[in-house]
Image (cartoon, rainbow, N blue to C red; front, side, top):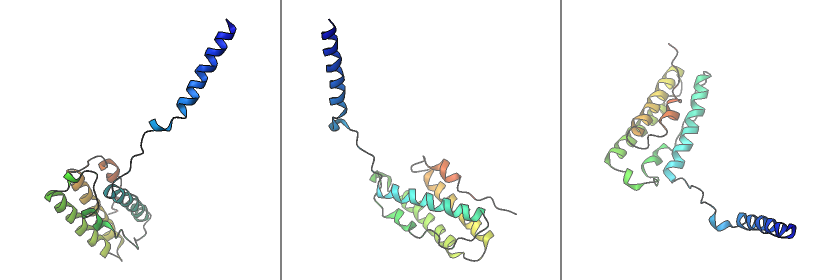
Amino acid sequence: MKTRLKIILVLTVLGFVISCGNKKNKPEMYEPSELASTMKQMLKDYESAKNRLDEGQLILSPVDYHKKILTAEPTDSSDINDLYMSLGQTFIDQADRYAAVKDSLPHQVAMHNLTIKACINCHEHFCGGPITAIKKLFVVENL
């Protein structure tokens, strides 16, 4: 009886070891689209800009690759329509105005916040998930 129990136990453990080594059932990792990757990087960069502005420091090199949002490959190509292109262009225009401000902290803060608002305006129509994170990028304007 003890021998049978030992054999069953050894076979059970061996079965678990073999099944754990089976790599064919391993789930695939999510690969973000080019557009998702671009926007994730933009989120990080605007967070860094917010931190500098919060510390009273001017932004010396604003995000400059934001135009890619109109050409980057999206997760779902059906999301790219006239409304997306219009809102995307509005964001790009605002980001360009933000980048043009080099010498005034209050003006940079205002332009930063308008740029973040342009992000939210688009995300209210497309991919609303990041809105909470984007809202954290607003800089409190000291009056």
